[in-house]
Length: 136
Image 1: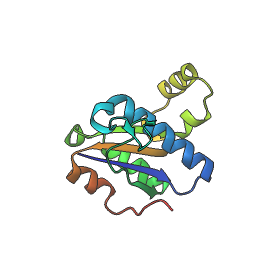
Image 2 (image 1 turned 30 degrees about the vertical axis):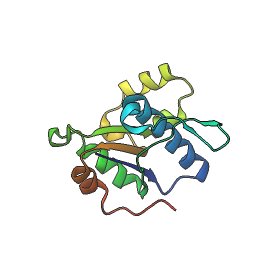
Image 3 (image 1 turned 120 degrees about the vertical axis):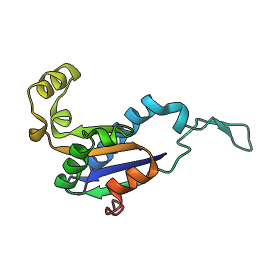
């Protein structure tokens, strides 16, 4: 299994950080036991809460590339990949109920993404993201 995040290279740094945090929290909610390692103690006995035990590449994509990846994932051939997306609508809504209402009125063609997180079979995730470089 592989994790990859693709975040728009065209958004400000603060929004990049916010998008990555939101995607990571959502991923952890679903797959915590598969992803998060146990707590660790340092030599002084201090506890350090478990962090991800898997590498998570954060890749740069254009708005169109992210949308194409998300649209591809609606195909049944990719049903074994979990996709967590963060859209412009979500970023602009200040409460979850409003986000829910706004999304229910939008066709998928009108949803634009700031980022997406993929978790699934390595070959399929690589096929979707292999042409993207690291976000720098």
